Amino acid sequence: MKKVLVIEDDVPLCWLLERILKNNYEVVIMNDGMEAWSWLTDGHIPDLIISDLKMPSLDGLELLENLSTSGLFKNIPVIILSGYEDTNKRKQCLDLGAFTYLVKPFEPQSLVTEVKRALSASKEKLFS
Image 1: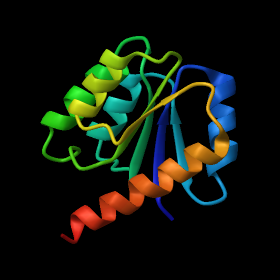
Image 2: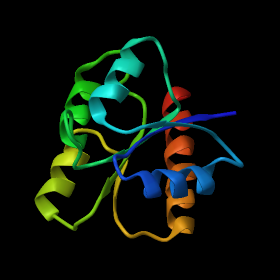
Image 3: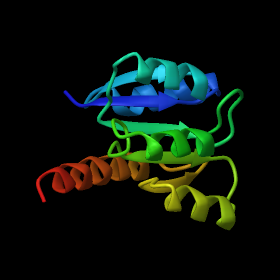
């Protein structure tokens, strides 16, 4: 079963994301970027990361920067969640390697579709 790391400081949204994904994926929840980075550098490698953009201690942009400069994590697809549409932030995230940028609130089905697309694209990249 594919492992999805969810990094989100909004507890009700974590609950919702877990409910949306848990039937098809192993879901690991972290409540801030620093906690997630620590988990990753402890040797855990998820198949996909879904991260909030605005978080305490290590935000989504800083996390993307760390991931993109790391040899070990740079190929993990990342879906960024943001509470607001910001063209500059979207561009920054995509330039740093995010697979996509979704604005909250989002339709659960669109998240599921993006998760499948990200995992599929990641698999294709491995075999190309």
